[in-house]
Length: 277
Image (cartoon, rainbow, N blue to C red):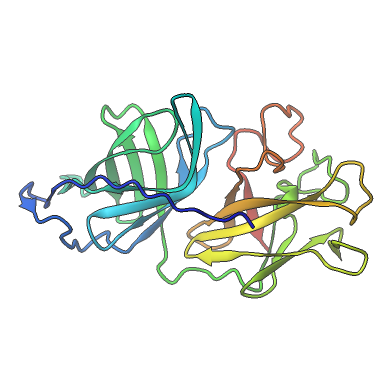
């Protein structure tokens, strides 16, 4: 599995309470500290809206997790996490909570200025002028949903061009979280084999709503079971725990891509999703 390297970029500022009065750096706040949120980033410039999660920490910071892409001096930088600071928190007349921050989440360099929380279960983050919704999230239950012992696959997909895998997201159709450590895979009702006598398996790790796992595919032209490519994937569980938004850094990952106009891996422009069954 791809090693996950967390790169945290935290800019510290003094915060404000709901009335706008200054509060000490790192002061505790009742809500939404220690909550986790799941959803997607703005999809502008991407093949689809990338999945992500956000965790409000116990101080006045938050951490976002996903496959983040940035460019600096014509150099590509990828990060598994980014961090930001709550500059102030306000209660609006309509009942929403408004969090003021200053964070960039994509290579588009649009700055997220405000995070709005509605009904204590939905987040809409926007740019300073409100013209760009930079990410949209929902509250993930604190109890979570362990994936151990579950099976997942994409939706039935008649356009699939992958032999014996008539589903979207073929790299993960079907993935089985066999125990607390390993996944195995099923194809056409049979175990996917690494060799003639060895079943393919790979390690995974679940942290709250995040699932770090691997997908697979056979090398083109090779006999089945003779050569397998393993691709690192990030999964973000939905609040109900019955579906998982997925994404991968790997160029070999079989995910929707506008280059493939016949959509062999799932509907173009839509965040890839696998379902528990």
